[in-house]
Image 1: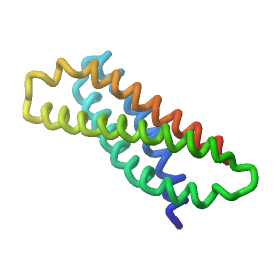
Image 2: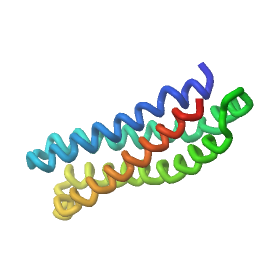
Image 3: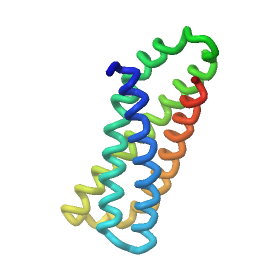
Image 4: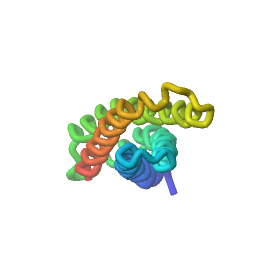
Length: 140
């Protein structure tokens, strides 16, 4: 297995993890169930961690396909540009999720006030990383 394989395999972890965790987090807010929200927070953290090797192997994946017939360099550039934004968003989501997870454990008072902003960030990050994956899928 090479870095291109790692890139292609792990991107699904970040995308699906972010999407499913956003749905679970929204369900936890709707049900007012702390345990459901905590599961989603862990999912956000896992998605953020998986995004790191996906991003770092992106350049190798580009080199592997850029000279193949039928591959559009403009699509590669669009994918790369959106990946930069998506990485920042998913990492911010993972970091804030970790802070909230710690805050829940330590019973910080402000945690309940930031669940809706975190849900908004989750939707934006999941949308961004999904769009990045969509563009990546169009490359080949």
